[in-house]
Image (cartoon, rainbow, N blue to C red; front, top):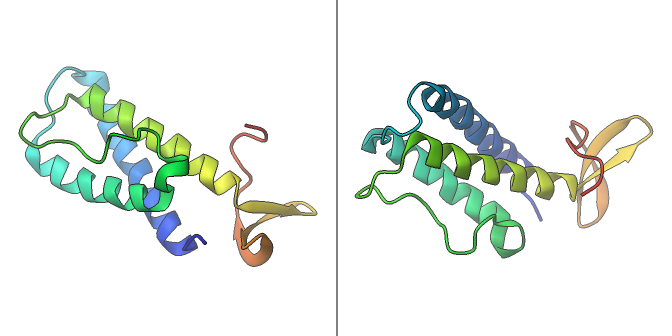
Length: 123
């Protein structure tokens, strides 16, 4: 069962990071990201790993970035993109449409928690 509030917070944080790193990556894609940014990114990736579990996780052998071998801006952007896509797949599998509105479901049953329509209608 998904904790909707935790999910939405994690997804929003990842989207914010994706947007920020995207800006950096456009300017200097091959520059190494600094340790400060990794200290912010890695805990959010850890939260996403908890939500995604084995079924939805984009890479079975990836947990977070190593702060000793600093990844490039474009590397981080690639990973964040994959995590956002997998979070959206998890969300799409756990929402339902009622007339024209979309709602989260828990244990297969519609809740009163509204959400946006899925970004892709079919997977």
